[in-house]
Length: 198
Image 1 (cartoon, one colour):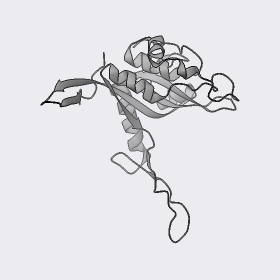
Image 2: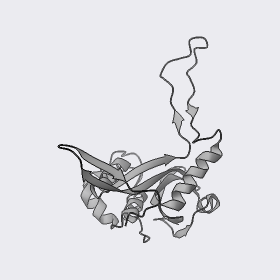
Image 3: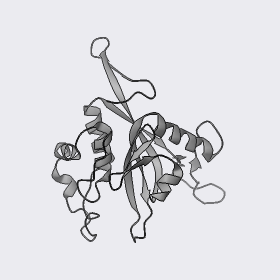
Image 4: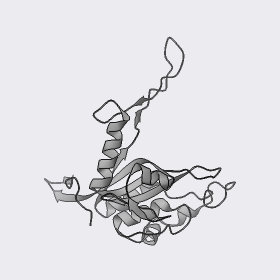
C-alpha cells in the first residue's frame, strides 16, 4: 500500500479507499461523478458545505473491482423499538453488543485483530481544537496506518490518539471469488482471513 494524500479537503474517505484498492483517488472520483461537490449545506464553509462522498458509493466501487467490504464496529448497539416502556413511559435504551464476551475489551480485540491481519479502511473522528468535530478515515494494511492527511505509522490506540484520531469502525477488504453454480445462480465467496487484496 502506498500513501496517498486527500485530493481535496474533506475527501480522506476517498483517499483511504483508493489506498486500500491500490488505485488513484482521482480515479474513484471520476467513477463517482461530480455530485460530491454540490453545495448541499450552503451555510457551512468549504469543505463542510459539499454533499461529499457516501461510503456506500465507495463500497460500490470496491465491489465492482471484486472486493467485499465488511464493517467491524467498535461499539455496536441494538436499537430498541420506537415505543415507550408501558410502565415508566420512557423510551427504551439501546443495548451494547460485545463480541463473544461481556465487555468492551472483546470489541477492541476484534478491531485490533482486523487491523493487523488484513487491509481496509478505518473510520472515526478527529479531535482537534475546532468548533466542528469531523469524521476522518485512514487506510490500514496489516498493522500499518496510512493517514491521507498525515503519514504512515504502526497501529496502536495510543499512536492513533497521538494523531488525534479516534477509530470507531474497521472496514475490512477481502477479494471475492465468483464462481457460477447452477443455472441463473452466482456464488460469491470471500477469501480466507488475512489474504491480501492485491
